[in-house]
Length: 164
Image 1 (cartoon, rainbow, N blue to C red):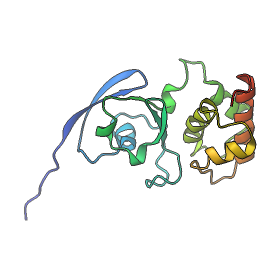
Image 2 (tube, rainbow, N blue to C red):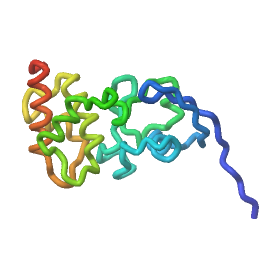
Image 3 (tube, rainbow, N blue to C red):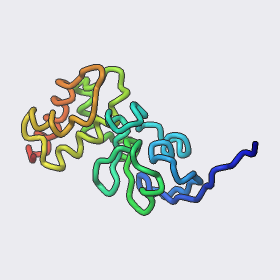
Image 4 (tube, rainbow, N blue to C red):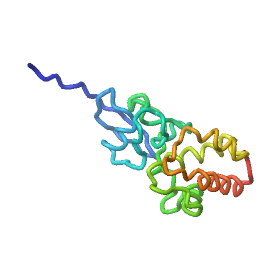
């Protein structure tokens, strides 16, 4: 019996404003490339099926599930992870609000929740608690911190002038 090694290729990725080139098999997900090849472990592998949202990142400003996105397909696009959300040591307002409103318990889903929460406001879908619930429904919190997550989102929305 012979062993066949999988083919690999160089995949250039633009992540958090920096260019990286990783050598990957074509089937590697963006999530695995981030976590296992680039040590960007903020995005979590919760379900690996696209149902929990803990792996949410942005590609070209849109929310995507990194576990369902091939790393090679993200090449040529701007990727932002939770590690790229802060401005140096200055946390993003949503990160500060999650701390202030205790919008997490175990913290496993927090990075995906924050990445989605920022976009919910930017997309104009945070007008009511029902809107927030609907447009955050792809992000599961098994600890049920939803009231605090909604409070954090409302705080950032209202501080930004209530645009939603």
